[in-house]
Length: 339
Length: 231
Image (tube, rainbow over all chains, first blue to last red; front, top):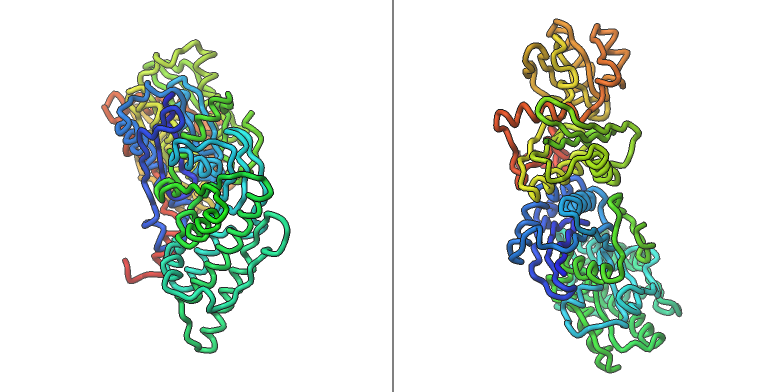
């Protein structure tokens, strides 16, 4: 079964052809990151304008790399949400048009489920059940994947996402968008014990997160130092902040493994590329004999392949979308199937 | 047979035209969600009119100006369909499409679409034996557009969603209003304009076609104001 998947939820236009859920025949990503850099973040209208320009060439390139024609496709998939509404709408319109023009079924995919399923592309032998730690610019959550189509949300952030805190702090430090990788790079050179930042909700016995207090503490620290004209060792601040985030993510993930008895942890979302988080989880999982899975950086970014992979398992369950499908910028994680 | 769509305004419209015969048209002015309804309406239109997808030999779309999001929904749809079916794609200027609502009126047609905050997208067309562009399109304050139309002289008839919105101002300036059924965006008119363009081989490349926004994004304009040195 060959699925063409469209992803346009934020600042990457991507299309992929996926065969039988796990085989990536192509995964073409047109990134707008350099375009949005000067604005200090993604500008929705500009993102939408680039999506409409790129969507068809990217789809054709994906087909050409996969060595197939439109008519060879068995289904068309698209990210329904969450994301920027104007950006999502371009992918949704293109995917609906393709499904209708070809007379093939349409599959509407939740972007965050896609991120989790990127692990199935990375590890051919990986099968549910497993625990997923999803960490991105918009989300932070712990999810139990019982089987291919049954998820349980154990906990999520009550305010900011972890990736949001990374980007905001990098911005205050004067680094361009996206700032997360800059913090990661600085943290490698710094002393994580130099500054003590609060570990939000670390003591609470649940699986929820909170990062806005930590974010404010770091920004206050930077501003206070600036006002008092005190020198700031950026490397130390980055290392101390990153440690506070990584420690709480690791602790909660380990507690979730203990509670569920699951033996596999998969990492998903843009922050999965963070080297501090990876090292911390590797050590903690290693000590417990738990298997840790993490997609390559290219599969951690927004991409069509993960959407196509998720879509395949939805198709297996007969979960198709109607032609009245609309984009949903705030699509909840455990959304009811599209009617 | 040519399939035409217009999602540039609050009106959702699709039509099928065969040379000089309008075979079917579906126009709804109920603030429907274009993203949800466009494909179902096209599907119903073809089905009810007994037309098969393989009978469609060209696709036309209103390409702007208009609602940025509406234009992208229409264009993404039209581009993909034209490419998959390997049929010509014809991009029709939204204002030109509106002018075709009054083709042969022996008057000058003033299409007016909403550009927000007291501004309109406007142009002036001569609709006599032939249709021609008399004054080029622009986004401008509605008062300035009305003044220019009055200065132009002759019989001027306003069409488009802003013909409703600024009805009093237009009538006070001596500009006529098209009747309601000829005032809104209609895919039948996009199809008629597209047919004329097709005869002239004026087709668009689905791989590169983008909406005619007229306006740049606000973020870009603000950024340039703050960074005058980059100009």
